[in-house]
Amino acid sequence: MGYTHYWTIKNAIEQSNWEKFLEGARQIIGTAEDAGILIEDNSEGSTISINGVGAGGHEDFTISSEDVGYDFCKTAQKPYDTVVTAILIHAKKVLGDDILITSDGAWFEWESGQLLYESVYNIQPELVLG
Image (cartoon, rainbow, N blue to C red):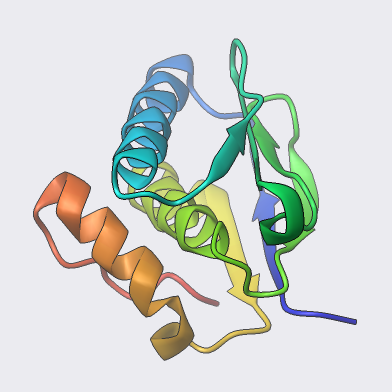
């Protein structure tokens, strides 16, 4: 086992919502890189795919509009976990009830992701787990 985040995309996502999600996820990644969080960004097209760099990496976090159903990413709380949790917060904000997010971590353990999200959107995120 290990520190892992889980999500289920329940229904096919409307294209306009997915594009809004992608735009925001890219903003989050860019802000994280500007802040010095080392990210390996393999995103392309309609897929977001990131990992940490070197010893700061663990499993790829990949999310795509074609991936309806259950998925997960084990981050082991490495530095890129901040970016993963911020993107999941953003996913919940944009996709609403079409995505269910759970985690091995409690909401307070997502604090760095909450702060990254807040720095991009200038709003404090609401609880997204469960």
